[in-house]
Length: 512
Image (cartoon, rainbow, N blue to C red; front, side):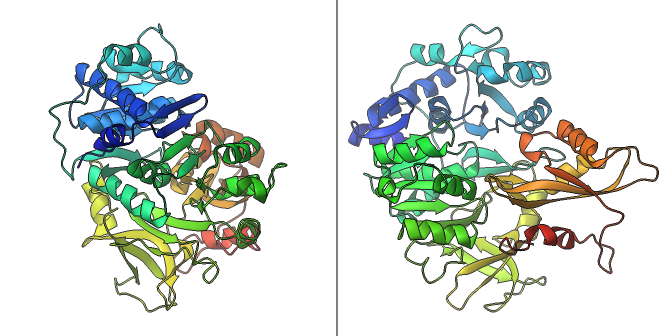
């Protein structure tokens, strides 16, 4: 089961149907498949073989998409890295993933040049730039693919269990956690979500978020699976987003709450311009009820909501169920099971809160080189999410709390402990607690609450600037630092972040 053969199939049986649109580039399935084959053959000629890791550090672009599928065709493993990472974090993840080839663009050359000598696994001829020929130390993507043949790669045998990608969590300090997905898992992304979202081969999907995050595969895989059309935007800008939906007659979109809010507040927002839409899917962070109601009033019968983990459990609230279950995040997909368990591992009855656990065909094989973490997350075949929720009498899931205190900012998972590890390095800081507070644009934004050592010399604003200079990625920057005398604690001495969050979240849907 090689997901790369999907493109071979559509190139043969749907050759003239529009496959992908990016800017002024519009490729049919025949053209798209040939481009993918050229890159696949070029990589094979460079010595990339089955199981080798190929990392990307790229913004949204056609070359990034082509890399995903070319890597699949030759049985290598793609490692998409965020463009928000700094050199130190890049080095950590490139090393941890055993990367042997890097495809990037000129924007990141300066930072990569500071760490290239430390990445001996990447040979000098395997640093590739997509956008600028003639840069010392880098080969040019266009020249490599132009010189390669466009026939199907030969002699590649892929099984269901073979890995397709390693997706790193947003945590960038401490021990990396790379989530592996196999060809089998990604195939189920295609089949399962195409069915759940009522996609057809004539659907037109548009995506404006960064496609290096796992959430992007939620609409990417079903679109390519059935041979529909995928429109990729460089970034989200609400006015042009609406214009593109209207012009291209887009049928399916997936948006984080911040994008939905920005679209509805855009000067050209008009239900009439968005009539082609059959699905508006929200994911990545809670969309508050006021925004849900406004959206479904303007565009009824289109709203879907998804709850899921990159590790492999998903529920979907179908557009036909929204009216009767508006606060739910839906039900598991077919062939997927869910349980709500208490601290003793026993299933709780409807209405009672417990940990959300699930199993099914989307479940990851494990964390890359971290069997210890895999064993903690997947117990007897069940993924333990670390999130708290309950189900009603009909089996619909309701989120209650994030047991792991994860922050979701602009659709990106931000782990407070990573930031806390930085904060407590400041000589004036005694303790630190980081958590998310509501943000109109990003959904949530991190803030740091700290206690200080005796005779401190730092104030809150200076400390905030210090933290934001030290964190590994831009999405870890804190919006505010609050200095208090002591943390609230329970009888066991555990810090009660819930109590500190409460004033910020009151009136915002109860995400405490």
